[in-house]
Length: 368
Image (cartoon, rainbow, N blue to C red; front, top):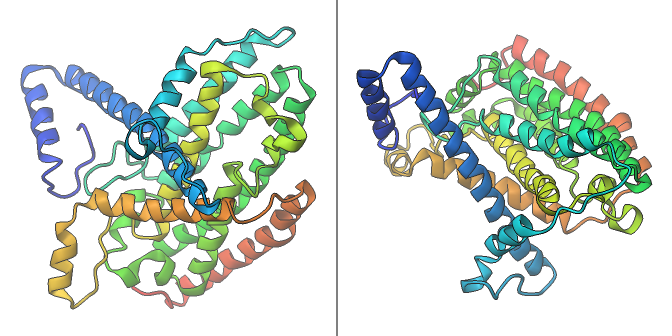
């Protein structure tokens, strides 16, 4: 199938029609090959469009927090500023750096892009809009998203620059540390739901009080807060932006990159912000499920009328705005404070919280 189709939806019907048409005129392998290419093109297009949109949104939000206008020249309200910047970065010269490990130096940006793209493809966008749905979806997401750190370490090592190397070491320590808390937070929900399949996790969150953040009581709320903190730290964004602290390291691990190579790192950073919010929405906030309350039939019919992907993007947008609010509110932490927060506080709390969720599930205290 072109997409995993769980329930009928108007948006999915053309896709099902395309699938049946291709299978009618082509052998199965030919139909599948065309569908895979189409899905890949759609995901790549969404990848680029979402990155441009997020760059514009952050600039506007930053302007609001700093009492200025933000982009306002290129297009109405500066809406095409990100497009202009994309064109500029595509035509910029890639400066050749001497004394670098060329193979690793040029390979590093692709690790970042591939890691975020593999995670991007596993996100359930709406009812029936799921490109790939593994029965170990949570494990897959944690595994492939962790590949991005390889690109960061390769970039710092191969650049032959002390600032890049220090930034890469900081990023490695930070990412690996906070990946533990993010993984434990997601495992807390896996214990609650009894499955790692993302579509199954979403299907269990039909009504608002069935959303995992409420369904699992205090352990679920703690896991949600820790996941947001850990996810924000993994994206290397303020106040956790030690790996690319301008005042200390110029630009950190991508100091020596220019043109499209720098653009890959820039693109992956914004998409990782979206991916963290999308996984948090899927696992804790009901995914694409609309806001529904048992017994409120009229209200439920109205909310059902809104397409599921609108609900998904609305919830993701809320978490992204929360992330931007944190970034432009708190000052940058020192590296020792950052690591102490993880190893001395978040990780012990997370492990105890996971044990607490096991007790809640065994005693049947969660909302069924």
